[in-house]
Length: 398
Image 1: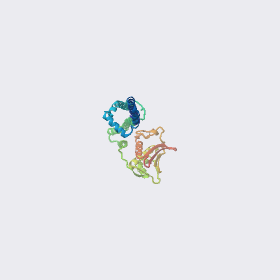
Image 2: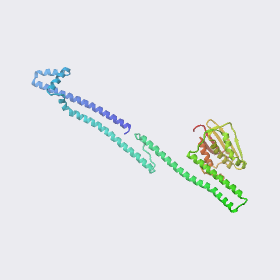
Image 3: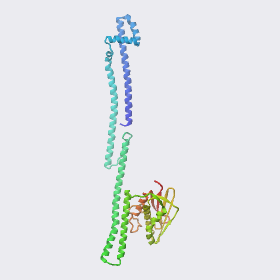
Image 4: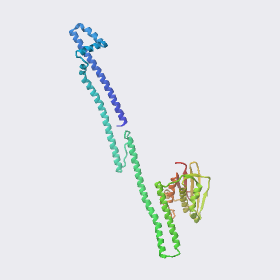
């Protein structure tokens, strides 16, 4: 029974009790006055028959019956002849008890009605919630009939829990599918260098000391480096997913982080005769982890270098405003294919213009690292040609 029903029940019981009490008092008053009237009638009638001369005297006595002294004398006289209070009460007691029983029975019936009604409502609501949970367990999409009663809070909590469980189930199914896809991609990525390495080892064993041995060994070293990069990237991604990768929060100068990110790529840029243009600006400072921020930017610069082509140009610039620090990494290559743009940051995705040695985890790793540090990463094509990555590190919490 909800609060409203209980209040109604209590008010109804109080009203019934008040009404019955008033009615009982009224009945007692009527019966008592009727009894006194009957006694007076009997007394006058007897006096008029037996002692006519005393009629006026008896009437005068009745008019003065409220006098305390007269009432006391009359009580003593009645008690002497056995007309005690119990003598008169004996005839009225059954009437009083009957009225009381009817009153209490009425109150009890009212309470029983509301209690039974509340229990039926509880049973119905429990049945509805049970049926809803059974439908959920069977995978059927159903909605709860919302009502404002004592079960409303429980109903809301059940609905929230079911919705959260459904979302968790969907996430788990999606993650399981992603894991299956990722395992297939990892197997494919590992199979290619392993096959190449096995073939080169076989050639070396068959041909012995030949001048191509050095070339084969260099290719082996290249494939080993590729596998090391793949394994390191996968380990970092798994630590990011598990939340076990600790990222330091320190004040970083954008220029120094960009220089640190460019250093490992200088041989590659030099070999391709590319131009790296870092446009130095006034000091721009943001909070983040120096090592992993440089790693994220390095992957972006590496992507631009791979797509800019021989003699291409890579431009890096940055600026700061009260809301965020922005770093732009752009090239003058062919840009991104429009079909690739929505999928660039998916793990193991290789676009149409990807180089043959591309693994497809560098951009995904950069995005995860930047977003973990209160940042965003966006890829787009420039109006005058070429690709552009936009990195923003926001001040405080977004």
